[in-house]
Image (tube, rainbow, N blue to C red; front, side):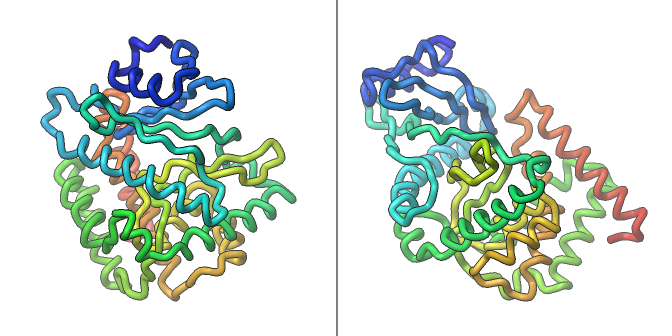
Length: 314
């Protein structure tokens, strides 16, 4: 990779912040709908460069998504030092990158080495240790004072009203009639069974996935990355991420070590978030892999709808 493959403003900001950074040796780490990430060699320890994927918005007439991505990234720069000060294993040495006009163009943080969590790693003693470590991590994260998170400009939202209702409304016209009916029945059942009843309000990671949970070679939790979706909301959202990634039995093992509030509806809400996760692929998938991500999301929703039909509608 050469600096020419990165926006010039990002290259200039990296060089100004870390003159010893070797951009010519930078290597891609991955990308999502909102950001791209690169590993940048630096003599005192490699950094991760993350920046908004500006090119994906050219001509897309969706500038609000770019504004959202930038705002989330800026909030993360403020949040991570506060989490690190609480002893949580999160990226450190955060640097906000700005162009010559003072506009935010990306961020740098120290690399957390480690492998992403995969279900195949959950065996024997490693499984038990990791269940405990994740339970402890989410206990501490969810205990972070929500008023402090709001003071750091994080969103404080009702997940149904402000997140999932708009997702259902946006995605329903993009799926087939049978899938649309399943989405409607899923939403109706969610409310009939209690909706957001009993949901506490805590700081959540908001995007728990294997690529964001970094493990040592021995299978221990080394760190958690990518807090761009962090918000004050329902803790079941983070629990759902573990359920989706590792399965319900492991989620239950983790909850044995979780000291946050486990209200009677937590598992029900977590299952709803698991069932609805492909909505995000449909909502933002036109910005990933030339739109293939949206196609994959529609297929996953159609498969869930078909499976529900075979089970008699549930």
